[in-house]
Length: 415
Image (tube, rainbow, N blue to C red):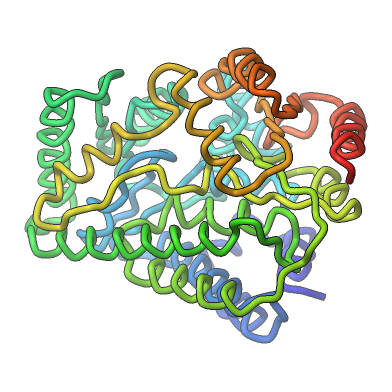
């Protein structure tokens, strides 16, 4: 039994509300992680890192716990030594462990409507049930996702904790760069006050140095994946890199883990003859059938839009300007044609055979651009498949249709 199977079994046995706050739980899980087999040393270290981060979040008297939205620059939180907790990542884990139905019911009982993103509804319900740690503050940015800022504002009012919002203009310009930079400087000082800390510029520079190492390691990983498939599960990179991208930037340990992954990939043999896909958005965490289908048919995710490096080099001597540029440079911020052009370059650079877009119900930003993306890829003669579904809520849509369509798409590509 591997580590994930151990974890899922313990959840089934009742590893829920009270166990999550018990230090013994984490000692047991860390022991299991050290004794379990993983495809790579990187994955074992990542599992231990995630357990340590979660334990810190639940630990009484720990550093302040800051809930951050998916695209918020976590470097300013890491620089202060605070705990970064992503409720969206945690909602994905809850879904994979079978906890989402109870969380979603709890959220709906608290008047969170079913037409909103299930990541956010699940997070709200999990917080109500005590499955998530109590936050000391919320941080969100306005770009790419409308749901997280609204959820965070609502939860902050209910819990009577601060909510910090980074307002990101729609267009990238010198004025926008300066505007976002000023906000980041103010947010860093406000967050420091939250924990009675001094906003040390040296600590922020160190966080940016770690983040730039993180970026360079990701570039090495992208280079390793060009034209090469590995004897790993199809969603290996989607599962592991998304977590680190959302919570690890600014952490020296996260940077070291990615450097280890790059080293291990450089030594791994290639698995030839696989259908190579570019995957858009995320995946249904409650249903492993799509990824099992890819594995059975010898297909793999050669690249994912959520894990590639889109931002320029970070300059630790100019932390606020660098982070502002990073935020504004997101390829999906602005016209959908900008996203399409970036995806085409990514597809060609990674030698992908086709594109699969998982259109997550409730994500207006991603799913709203599907028709424009479909039109662009059709014009370019690139196979493009849309799978409508829900990443977290297994009861939102039927499962069989998506699997059938994926199988037909793979057959068309020769898989």
